[in-house]
Structure formats: structure tokens, C-alpha cells
Image (tube, rainbow, N blue to C red; front, side, top):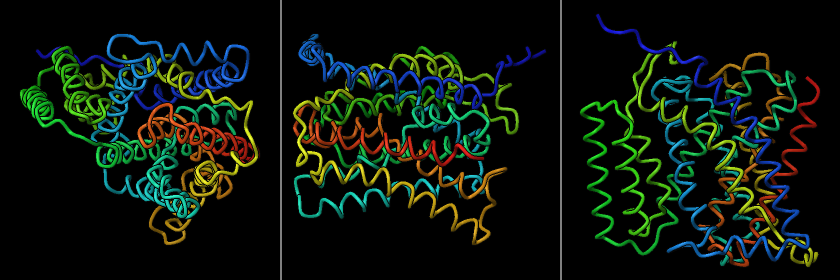
Length: 387
């Protein structure tokens, strides 16, 4: 007789919502600590620490290229689970978050390009305001308690998952230069090995992670951003579809996702936030604050996101293409759209790729990201306070 399948205590989506909401609050504290360190007597020590050389890379690069590969491994698991055995396993369920996410990426990019059209050096940053930080946004929602219906939390998660997928495509297609063909060929061979493991339905996790680590080295050497190795490894992990009851099935993908959820939420993302959110504002001038790069990102996150997402959702509802999320009002959809303007983690990550770590443009981009995300969070909370 076949042994019974192990039952995971909570559903995947409920557990991830809980961990990411709490992790988002830890991320807020890490970002605040970074801003304090960068603007206090600890400023010199803070920036010196980030640039300590550890082997072939600085500490900051190890965080952005190494630790964030684990973050992208979790993101890849979330994307695959949602599309294979989750809330977006069917095409009807993909329409609302899919269209909302697409509009929520396109409109902010257009807002950014409109403000920076006269500054050609800034145009490479168009993708910075297209992302949504799911942990930060869910953390803000958690502060509101039961004022926010569960349907909105699920919708926010779905939009952010598709946002992440779009960001991964952008990183691979736009922010890759000077590819080393030999290393790329090695990466291709390792991808084939991952596909073979998946085809043979290998249920042990460690072979996937071992090949994934080797893939990280090959992708890093190729010139493509190494964090994409995490996504590729996640997509190779098998999952056992079980419509309606995903929590009762065990699989390599679910085991990895559950093992990483808390580590990423409470350690990796806060470390990334602390390392990247520190901006020295002590010499900030009005001219610097009004730079098109800063204004473009802040306006795109604050205005572009809410216009794109709120407009797309309400248009679909008015056209009777989809139903309004359960127990949600147009005002709450507006509040959700504002919270989607919290870009933070992924936006900071793309800014470093677009302009180069430590560049003046990256520092300006950080200021725009922090300002846009902060205003989006505060206004989103004010809108959602009244049910």
C-alpha cells in the first residue's frame, strides 16, 4: 500500500502571506536602520562595511549577487506554484491579476520616460518603478488588520507574483551585457541537467540545489546576472498538482519554498534592504531632489502604479470581464493600487543593474524609490483605514 502523503499544516498561500507580512515589517525596520546609519556619525563605517572585499567581490556584491539568488529561488518557486497549482492555475483566474500587473508595469514606465525624455542618460532606468515589493506591501496591509478583506491580500500577492515574473524577463533581456559564450555554454549544459532531473522526476532536493549552485557560478561568469540561476533552478523543481487542496501534497518545490520562506523574509530581504537603502541626505539640495531621475521614479511609483492598476481593474469590472474581488469596494481597490506603488526591494535591485552599483545615478534612483514607496505606503494606509 502506498504510504499517505504528508500533510503540510497550513496552506502554502496562507503561510507565505503570514511570513511575508511579518517580514515586510522587519524590512521596514531594516530600511529605517540603513537611513539612520547613512545619516549619522555611523555613516563612514556603514559605507566602509559594505565595500569590504571578501574574495572576488565586495560584501555588497555578495549580498546583491549571492544572497539575492536565494531570494530569486523563492520567487521562482512562488511563480511556478501559483501558475501550476495555485491561485493562477487556470486562465480565468489569471485575467484580473495579469491585466492589472501588465498595466501596473506599463503605465509607470511611461510616466518615468515622459519625465526623463530630455535626459537620455536616465532612460535606462525605465524598469525601476515597474516592480511591487510584496513583502513591504503585505506588511503595510498587516498593520491595518481586518480592515482589508482577504480577497485583496490574495489579489496583491497575485499581482506582485506576475510583477516579479515581468521583472525577471526585463533583467534577462535588458540588463545583460558582454556575454561570455564559453560560460554561457556551460550554463546551458547545467540547465539541461536540471531539465533531466525534472524529467526523471527526481524527488530528492539536494541534486537540484547542487546543480543550481554550479549554475550560479556559470551564469555569473557569463555576464548575465547570476540571480537568474535561482529562478531557473526553481522552475526545474517538480511539483505535484492537486487542484483544490495544494496543502496535502508534498513535492521538492513545496519543500524548498517552505524551507526558504522565513529565511528570505526575516534574513535575506532585510539584509538586502539594510545594505541598499542607505542614502546620505545630509547634503541634499532642492535641485537634487527635483532631478528628473528622482521625480520620474517617485511619480511613476505613486501615480503610475495607481493609475495603471486601479484603471485596469475597474475597467475589467465595468466591462463585466471579471467580478469585483469579494467584499471589496472601489475605494479599497484604490488603496491596493497605491500599495502596489511600494517598489523597494526589486526597484533597488533593478536600479543597481541599470546604473551601476555606487554610481551617482543609483543614489538618485534610491532617493526616488524611497520617496515614491513611502508616499505610496502612507497614502495607501490612509485610503484603506476606513472599510
